[in-house]
Length: 234
Image (cartoon, rainbow, N blue to C red):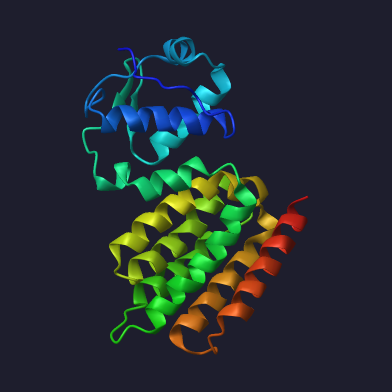
């Protein structure tokens, strides 16, 4: 299948432009759920790019549920496409995912928003968050790989997302974490398990009202914590 391809904008990353090409082909109907995508080599030839950005784009598309890779068969547009997949705001986040420093800053402010949403709810249920935290204290150990540690770490953040009961926030949050996940794996190691658990306990104490909620000081704490965690991994 030949894709409908417009001129690539070289001001951004090539992988993001490839993601945009797939999105545009879905929106204009050239691609539909269940369609088989061209192979990596065919994509390289059609778009006129090297293998690396094609593979990066495929990883992004697979992570957010746009494509499914079937071993020995190829790549397919998933049959379970939802409004999440084609949400312009979600794709906008993906398009700007190369600016990781700004995305991390956005995540910090976003998480303050999450906590404030939960705190100000008339009826809130933070028990699922507490249960995730308790299991993390038992499961996070130095023998796990960075990938495994990040997966356990993100369980807590996903539980916080769900506690907002806001579908817009949940969709945006999940995308933010999927984009940031590779960066988290890069600096996650056994030495900062304690820091991760302490951060989650801090979140819990804020949400439960044990600590006073002050958005500006919380953001500063997050920034400092991230900087220290990155430095520890070097």
